[in-house]
Length: 87
Image (cartoon, rainbow, N blue to C red):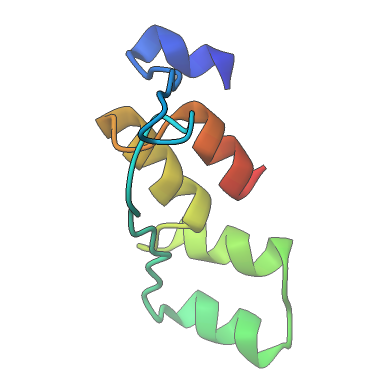
């Protein structure tokens, strides 16, 4: 995640109010999936995991990881929180 710092993504500092997390409250992260023909095929074949994620990425969808990284680039989430959420 350190490579994102050069793009202006900041690490959280935290305080007593936010319990050293660097933010308060919650932020919604959503995986958006459009039902493409390729996705229908992968689901029909019963594939899961990497094959399913790859097909979502190829289509017009946004994976959970993509959404988390986008929030980090916007300054809504810290890199530590992205790492905690998506590994």
